[in-house]
Length: 263
Ligand code: SF4
Image (tube, rainbow, N blue to C red; front, side, top):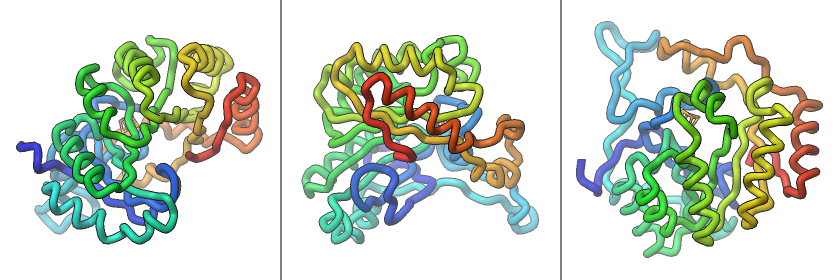
């Protein structure tokens, strides 16, 4: 695939939780992680994908993903430029893992920068270091997902080691590119005192960040798993209660962080 074409599996208009202001969020397909709590399981496999669902016409499948050129994506983005200007918003690239389509993402970031459109990238940080540094230099704000500090737990719940992720976060911190941590609150998995404590210490040691967004687990993807025939490993988990969320928020605040709920 050339750098002017990529695969997008969703475009969300008027998004208000994916960075500042009103935004258009583009979901790029493919992710190297396999998080148990993933809300976008349809976006994990790279490339176009045909799946048979209840809603599929007989003998046919539903195509997930659309091949789009940079110009086509830009045309979508530009439709809402008035909202970005009025609200201090812009464009967010999410996924999947948007940096998996690094050349395409870089081309999109360049055209946005040429037009002075504010860009946000939501990333797991699980990409090669050179790619990460190259792409981050073109982003206005990075939303960096940080899940589990214990490597064994990270491997268990996401399928990969966290070493590359932590290294990339340190490089991001040193680079001066504005960034915020996003923390998925998964009861009994990420919300232990130990995980929160070592995450706070790691982040504070970098000295560049004092802001964390808590993203409480929810069940809105249950229907997607069922429809796509994918295994849902979170069926036994209930979303955190307001009391549990308040407890985690207070813990991070106790370390001196400014904490937002839901991004
Ligand atoms: S990093 Fe995000 S998109 Fe990838 S599997 Fe985890 S939750 Fe899903």
